[in-house]
Image (cartoon, rainbow, N blue to C red):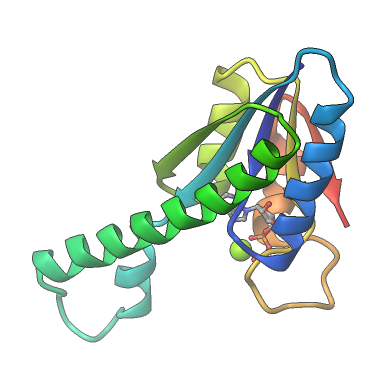
Amino acid sequence: MKMLVCTDGSEQSQKAVQEAVRVADNFKSAEVTVLYVYEAAALPAYSRGRGDIPEEVLLRYEGLSEKAGQDILESAAAEFKAKGVKCELLIKKGYPSDVIIDEAAEGGYDMAVMGSRGLGGLRRLLLGSVSNAVAQQAKTNVLIIK
Ligand SMILES: Nc1ncnc2c1ncn2[C@@H]1O[C@H](COP(=O)(O)OP(=O)(O)O)[C@@H](O)[C@H]1O
Ligand SMILES: [Mg+2]
């Protein structure tokens, strides 16, 4: 059973990691990949209308995002390791929903596991933008942790 666990480090995605550990622990042969997607487009979007951002600032921003992602992945990995479940770590750059949908299809996973909400603030919505897009468009099954 091949599982793609998606985390953005949010409280809800930490719940998703814990649940994925529990599911994986109950399968004889679970193959787990933990994925974090860092966004290259966030800074230009944020600074729209404020003039061009120097290349080195963009690269530094991306570097920091990638570093933050590695930390998030390491802490998820520790949870799997604590239960004796092996996992691979994957960090990719792009739009989170697009990257997750593509990876879920191309990596031959049986299911993607994710939180219902993430780091965004709109609590009145049941699903976040990423979980909503993945639930609707992914070719694999999706386990959404509430
Ligand atoms: N950048 C990301 N990389 C990997 N997984 C992500 C990323 N962003 C969101 N997710 C997954 O999607 C879930 C829902 O997050 P999201 O839809 O972004 O909600 P919100 O709109 O509240 O931020 C998260 O709990 C996480 O499992
Ligand atoms: Mg989000």
